[in-house]
Length: 286
Ligand SMILES: Nc1ncnc2c1ncn2[C@@H]1O[C@H](COP(=O)(O)OP(=O)(O)OP(=O)(O)O)[C@@H](O)[C@H]1O
Image (cartoon, rainbow, N blue to C red; front, side):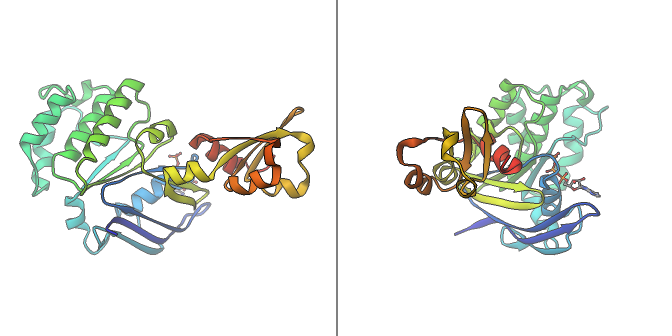
């Protein structure tokens, strides 16, 4: 197993929030989506990975190297894309690139020009005249033009229309043809992950709920629908979250096998969406 990113027992305490013992691994050749409700700790985790804030405990290794003692070397090999773009708005694409490129030994100008064309970004246009989607594509073009092996992104598709989003997802997907790279990105748009992610890491209130392959998650979780008469307080405990109505109930399980053996054919078990899993887990038994 060849981990590009390994996070172990990571801890960060703020006054009203604690990131608790966060652990997960990302191997070469895979896309991992990072999901969780607002304030769950996604950006904090990403900032810790990038060593932008100080951890209280735990270990982060990128390319097998400690993210603090090997920070410079690691950052040469990471493409970091985040929501608020930090560009000088008065500069053109080429002028901004000329400032950024010298920071990277592996800068590939031909690749950059190719990405500008592919993303329809006019080299002479000032960044202030770019739309949000264009800025995101510019960030991505910069991140991809220095041969980064790990692409790390904090909500890269937020606020983008479905056409831009689908273009960006296509780009990410095609990058994965190179089996030596990996992509880690946080998002609230779980349908994007249903399309491209191999692994999903779900964080809630500073704790990891799961970090698993998407296929395994969709296989083990199920939305169960049945009549109200089937539910008593013991049965309710079998569910991660339940929604009851006057007609019946709908609940999330992470053990569809057990539910099948308990209820036989008296319930309907459907495949959940990632949104179902998030909502039921966060809301619990209501
Ligand atoms: N510098 C800080 N000082 C104190 N608390 C902070 C600081 N930065 C973040 N927090 C708190 O940490 C928690 C997690 O925030 P974080 O930004 O990591 O969440 P998130 O999952 O990225 O949320 P969102 O999806 O809304 O972007 C929040 O409760 C936030 O208020």
